[in-house]
Length: 418
Image (cartoon, rainbow, N blue to C red; front, side):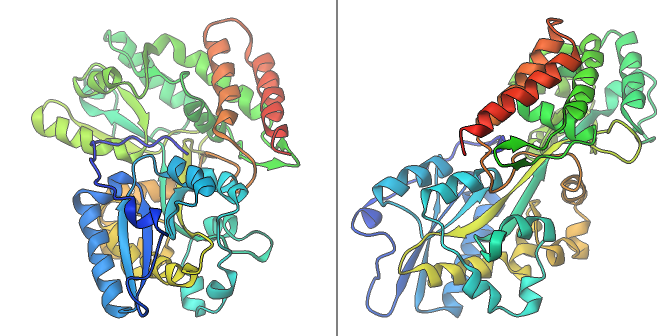
């Protein structure tokens, strides 16, 4: 899945006894128990409380269905492993970049019969792009739920000291590099090292106009867009530290006013909010990642969907999935600060007042999808992007040659899925 940074450690009392003797077993002849597995960070704080409210409301409306809410450590791997053992949830949330992997397990229920029977108002409320990814060849594998995208966090204290007018939006890469030169002039750095993970490199391929995709085991990403991204990495080098983005050291540099920019998803914001409360001299904001030219923006983006496994309880699990994905519930989940893939929910005025949420929703329309969804695109497919950036960054090869090799290496990865 796309990189998920959990800001807390959750100790989950996960009782396997219920599943060991037949998951989702009925408590009695009239009540069907639906096990719902979700990400561990969705089980704590405001998100966890909101989901528990959903369970109570759903059970009140559907007295013949009982939902067991299970925030599951190592969620996606647990489900993949469970495909062999038979220990599975009845409904689940999972990242879009796991779509092909999950379909290959043979456990995902086609929901087309139930989805198509829903009113148009229900069917049309979901983001068209993401619903389309879930609906190949007349099938419906799930419902879009949440989204994330890389954003550009800006240290306003550093930029002010460097004489950068942060009130002016960054138009393009040239404009961005010009601000880095000013930061360099005062002896500070602008970036951490974004060559350590292809997830970052992919975002800049999107910022160059590239779009993810795969057809017949070959990537649709062009070498020209990869080359542009790698040329940007060459320009980054004088302004970047060797500390990898994602390391706590890079976060600390940003929050102690020694680093101007930090690229990461919206989950990073709570830590920055805490740092700003502890240190009033640390001031920051967030914006879209600049693109190669005005009108383009970057950042790797992705999302999560709600699915149902094949079982005698699939219809009951579908009812639960449809309930939490519907606009009233999606709106309430969005109000916890999560960007949702429900257009009705995201248009809610109160949701729109959450600046980070609204910006993340905008960012998902740009950049680079973190996988060719529901097509073979393993996490290993990020490696050619990483290797190309490191080769260029280290001066071992030029951007053009590295881009061509990245395409070749990526096609070799994708060919294994044919």
